[in-house]
Image 1 (tube, helix red, strand yellow):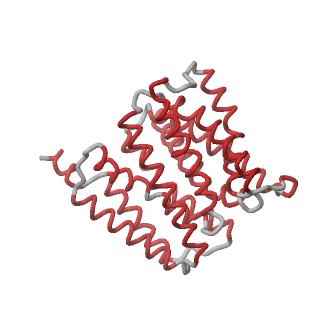
Image 2: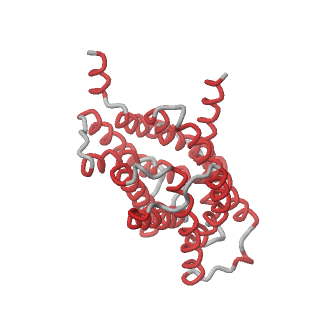
Image 3: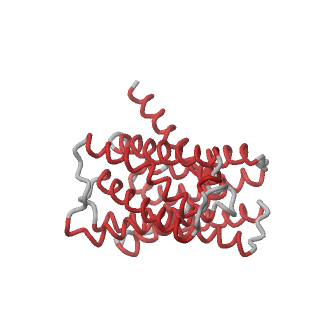
Length: 297
């Protein structure tokens, strides 16, 4: 029974994060990207705060980690989520999820640079297969990469790179900071900063925001951010990090199916084939063949 509950919760995380991309797509239909990112976090922050208080977790980072706190607030929450919102104005939600699924690959690269971890030959092959497949997906989806589309793709990949860097630096310098502490205050400050910056730069007319966009922002703040985080935090104690990390391989599949349904697009055989190759390639980076063989010998 416990195994079934764990499997269902794993599915909930995949579904929650898989629908995030469609939520962002709907939100930015009538809300500018800076403002949308800020509103999402402002909606999520009170629940994160209640969660932290209920668990009697620290809200503030230790004083010695002040610079790291600023790095997390800007490099994990503020800039990347603006870039994701910006990119989804020009890129389909399913493709956005696939682009962001490159993040574990950048974690691998940064781990080799900053943590001196070894990269195996099979992982290099997996990276080559993954990015080759991603190129073919972009080509098969008819993206001609004009100026706007190119900037959208670059923005999403930049967000993935920044998230990967924060994960690695956190492992190196912030391992003593709890998961709840890591998220709560940075989300609140990032939300306020993004929203105020949006008001000053984008001058949004909130009276023109559609009901669909408000619903998407509420979903992103309450379900995708808070709900997904709580379930993920629960699973961290019950699954190995490697098994749980496969969420990043699985959720793009949900994103493609759901995004194609909403956007009325057809999931072509080419998309299915290249997506399978991409995810297999990135899965190899997480389970290198050399390590598997080493355990058997």
